[in-house]
Image (cartoon, rainbow, N blue to C red; front, side):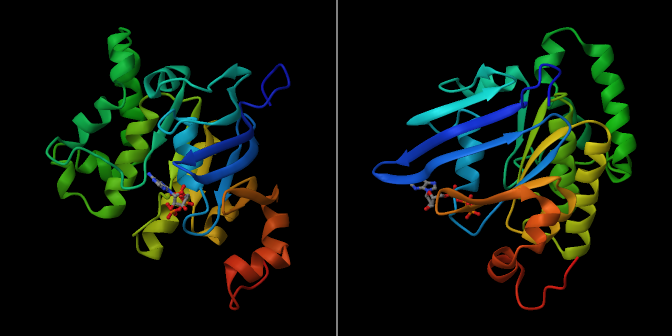
Length: 249
Ligand code: ATP
C-alpha cells in the first residue's frame, strides 16, 4: 500500500474490445507498492491486452484504471510512461544495431532530457552491477546477445527509467529452463530493491513462485485470485495449469 493506504495500481471492471470481440470482460485487480503480482492464464486469456490497456496502447471501453489514485484511463502511452509505468514488452524490442550501453541509456531518455545526467550515470553503474553479463558485453551490438541476455537487457533498460511500476510481459518466453529461472531470480531480486512489478506469464508455476499474489485470467475474466501459495495449492489451478506431474510446493 502507498502511505495513504491506496494500492499503487488499481483496475476496476476494465473492458476492452477488438471490434466486436470482448477481450477483457470487466477485469479488476490491484498491485500494492513493493509487491510482485503475477497475472497468469492460457494463450489468449487477455494478459497482454491488460498490460496494453494500462500502458494506453489499447483503448478501454469501460472501467477505471488508476496509479496511486490518479486516473490512467484514456491517457496516451507517453503520458503513462511519464507517470512512472514502464513496460518490458513480449519480444523484448531492443535495438540490435546499438550497443548494450546505448540500449540501456535509451531507457533513461526522459530523464536525460530532465537534466538528470549524473543520476542516470549512477543507475547505469548499478544496473551493470546487477547484470554482470551486460557489463562484460557493454560495447557489443545488442543483436549479438543470446535470448536470455537480450531479456536481461530489456529489463535493465526498463529499470533505467526508474519506474514506479514495472510491467513484464512473458519475460521467460522462448528461453531454456535454466535461463528462465535466472530471469525470474532477477525479478525476485528487483522486489528486494523495492521495485513494484506486475508480471505476465504463461509459466504459471515459476511466476507464482516469485510473486506475492496472483490473478488467474480466463477468456477475459479474473476467475481466481489470492496469495501465490494459496493459488499453488488450489486444485483447479493445479489441474488446469500445473499438469499431472505437479508436486505440492
Ligand atoms: P498470449 O499469451 O497468447 O499473448 P494473452 O493472454 O496475452 O495471450 P491477448 O493477447 O491479450 O491474450 O488476447 C486476448 C484476446 O484478444 C484473444 O482472443 C486474442 O485473439 C484477441 N486479440 C488480441 N489482440 C488482438 C488484436 N489486435 N485484434 C483482434 N483481436 C485481438
